[in-house]
Each structure stands twice: as C-alpha cells, then as structure tokens.
Length: 145
Image (cartoon, rainbow, N blue to C red):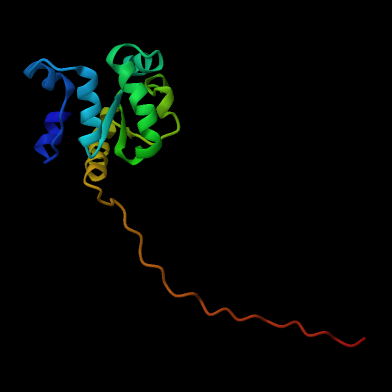
C-alpha cells in the first residue's frame, strides 16, 4: 500500500523501513512521525485490534498515544480496514468512519477514496443553493351563518 501511495505522489513512510536503516527509539520515532505527518493511516486488522485493545508491544504504545491524539486531531487519523470483520476495529476507533480496503471487489474504488482524502479533494460536489421559491399564502376568510 505504501508503494502505491508513493507512486501517486504521497510521501508514505512505514515504520519497518525506518527501523531497518538505523537504530531508533521506537516510541520516540512513533511520536515524532505522528507530530510531523499530515495524516496517520491506521491499518486495521484483527491482529492489530487485538494488540491495540490489550496494549501489547509497539501497537499498545501507539494506541495509548493515538487515544489522546484523536481527541484533538481526529481529522489527521485515517483508519483503513484491511481485516474483514468488526474484530479488526480497535476500541478507540469504533464509530469513526474508515476506508474499507478489505474487499477485493471494491478495493480500487475505495483506494481512490483514500487518495481523495489524503489530497483533501471532494469526490462529490453539491450544486449551488438556488433561490427560495415564491410562496403564496392563501387566506381563509370567515363566513357568515
């Protein structure tokens, strides 16, 4: 996914690539990347959700950081569903809209949605608001008995 995003002009970085280049403090690297990135893609799988929900390893640290971060920067978080069940969504992202890349059938269209989101482009544009119709109120006259 990162390679395809990079091919489309997105400077996508991946933790695994960064840590193979030099010895890093992983927690510091995650925090630094969260702060400097325009967007954070959270790739949701069942394994990721399990590790996030149980605060295991680097995913657990990332979760603790993202829980606080999402309160102030929710628009920077782009959850991407790769697992094919609700078990793939960690507790802190429940109820938040996500890009569904779990289904091969819709993958290309939804990947296009991801690119539009990253480039902050509207996929759908509403027509301008027209003029208010000229309403005529009818008056009901009383009648004599």
